[in-house]
Length: 197
Ligand SMILES: C[S@@+](CC[C@H](N)C(=O)[O-])C[C@H]1O[C@@H](n2cnc3c(N)ncnc32)[C@H](O)[C@@H]1O
Image 1 (cartoon, protein in one colour):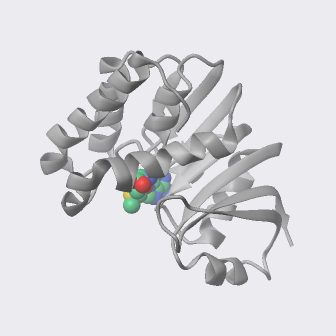
Image 2 (tube, protein in one colour):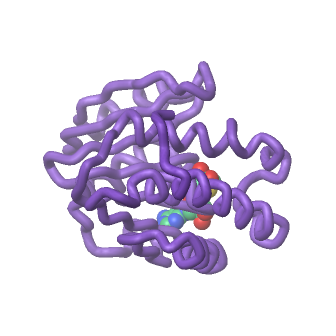
Image 3 (cartoon, helix red, strand yellow):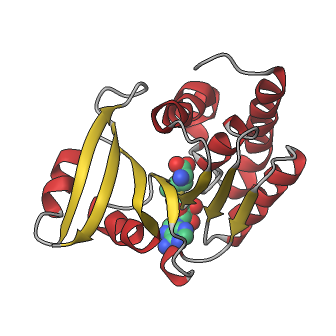
């Protein structure tokens, strides 16, 4: 991670505290992963900001859950003209996300409590998704919500190669797989130019 301000570190710490506080009630992350929150969740999300280096426009995080990676992106880019939208269908998790946005005084973050395919097309410059769905379903969502010139960052585990093969008959897209810093079997799939085959 590049050098960050004291305010950013404070916000990351407050975020971790809120996840720890609410996790027993709403299961934001697997309880077994809480002791490793930094390496399993924060570092995993932080690498996305280094890869994408967003300077402005809109960032749409699909299926945000407890805010990974969306809240982390919002914390790291709070001084940039980037509008962030978190989409999460679970009402309790959306309420948690709104609470985090308020407590951390995060500017430019909107939480939409609805299903991804039920909201109007967002024409986003950047899309992220972590632990949400298999690649064919993610491409459907990305196709609906990404600008033609935008980039999606799909955080995938060890099955990403197989999942890419499942998409061949239905989708055309350009893909660059960036190896994950936190898991040697995982990758961040940088996807552009999504269209039906
Ligand atoms: C496995 S969790 C992952 C959450 C978070 N991205 C993370 O990595 O910790 C998937 C989340 O996506 C949400 N979700 C699943 N399908 C969705 C949909 N169609 N629209 C909106 N949210 C959805 C679920 O409610 C859940 O919170």
